[in-house]
Image (cartoon, rainbow, N blue to C red):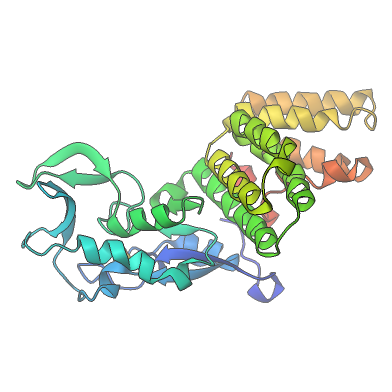
Length: 324
Ligand code: SF4
């Protein structure tokens, strides 16, 4: 795990929501917690966590009866297991709307997996007779947060153990924060286009399709009001960034970046960079290896090249590019 940097040396922290039990608070139905050391000990040096326990916030005690998602005659409901007449669906679903002031500034949300309230993906759904069904759903609170904030980067703590998902989520949080800062400052069309210019290769690495869609949209920027342009651009950007481009996508972006160094590098340097990108493509070295070389040569390159967030999408000290 990377060594944390003392908080006083860090810039402003990014506000990110989190299920309260992941911070070690004993708020689970059984009186326990689900501490995520990665969140508490590493991400907390960059993120200011805004914690929520939806079940406690709708007035349930700790400990309490366990609940689950049930496919009933009245649709998908969140029912207590022992007393299914106790239906908490409406209270949990409406909570996100009531917490708007707290949720609005967030640039990401880390949920607890497998929870009927907080699970953001693939939570088990049950038949009223208690049998587990083949279909999967989302926790009631997490579903509503995602409905109200469709572009908000969302992940589950369990999935953050996967290096690709972890890197993707953290990249999206930093990018979303940067975009939100621009959006809040009433940008001009030119400023939105300039913002996109520096994200081009990051988006290309994740999704060629979204990269092309964003290009087409911004080529016709003058046809839209600025607010419509910002809404459309944000959707394309954040939807594209959810994709895991993998080695194929990253190799493509690396090769495009290499193209900008054509006139700067001599033959040996070009060959070394080409060989390193190929080593990355076939899985011999992690992404950080060719990126270090691209960063190393950035001194002589154009501002456009140097501004590419693909070169450093998040703080080096997180070490996330060493594992993908
Ligand atoms: S998963 Fe959500 S509702 Fe359950 S204890 Fe954790 S924060 Fe509370």
